[in-house]
Image 1 (cartoon, rainbow, N blue to C red):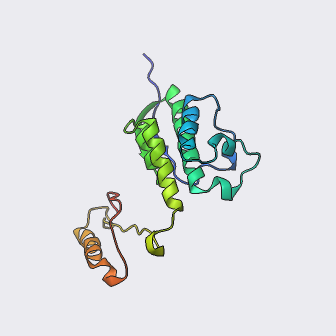
Image 2: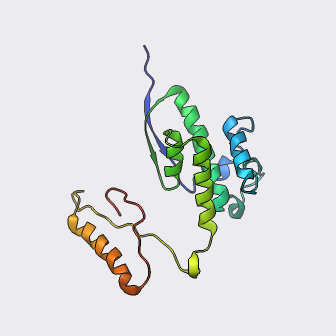
Image 3: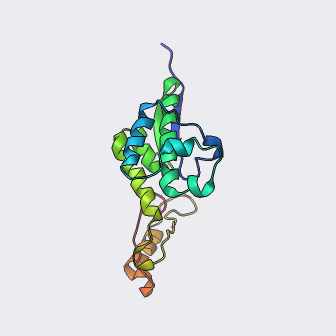
Length: 180
């Protein structure tokens, strides 16, 4: 019995679909066809038109509502090809790649994962309520030896409880393990 090489799949985030990616979506692939049907529900430009462009146009291709589903679909197709001759033993995601990892790992069926990616991308394009500014801060929760530091966790909790001393609203978004 021959064993396949074992791999960890890292699903990429924003910026992974570039000029070199143009023409990478196979029109006849069932996932591409299904993505086009789902995307039409949003009234957005077809992914095959974007992918088939003669030149990469950053305002068009990097628009969140376009870039995210292109990256998602290209990632799933790359993983499918990888699985042909490799044993996938772990899956991770970077940023938007977390959503792709949910599909690759089977935690979300294709339709749900595609809608999650598409809707989060659409949300990125919407203004914040009350014209407020947004942003995220990643704060370490580990000391220099990579050991959880309760004082750092307490500092985050204090900042959230103090709500920035009236400067705005602060919410914890994602617990990244060693970072908040």
